[in-house]
Image (cartoon, rainbow, N blue to C red):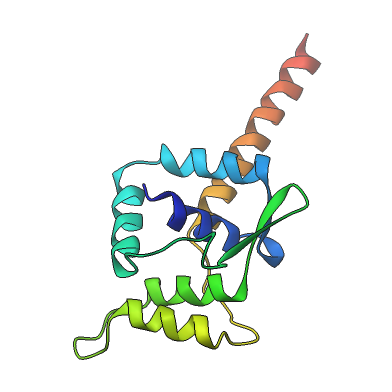
Length: 138
């Protein structure tokens, strides 16, 4: 699993791109233990931008006990997720172009963390229902 790509993917799944550190750590732990598919996916994405450094490139910012993805971070993530065209320039030069002129607002596609979050919430509700049934039965 590539840490920096995972951070970008997790942050983009939150409203306004902000996650408290506890939430970020929890989601990353879920993804880290989700199997080889996620690990291979993040490696492929990271290979498209080999000099990725989310901190020094200003792709995320640290604020109020958590991290927030910036517009530049959203744009770089979109580049990583885009299907490569055979005759296009390399992704690294695209990242440099984005660093020079970051668009004001960039919409991101539906992140892949959402299904994991829904599944986790469904399991939590099921556990709570079982506990309520057990408490009322005794």
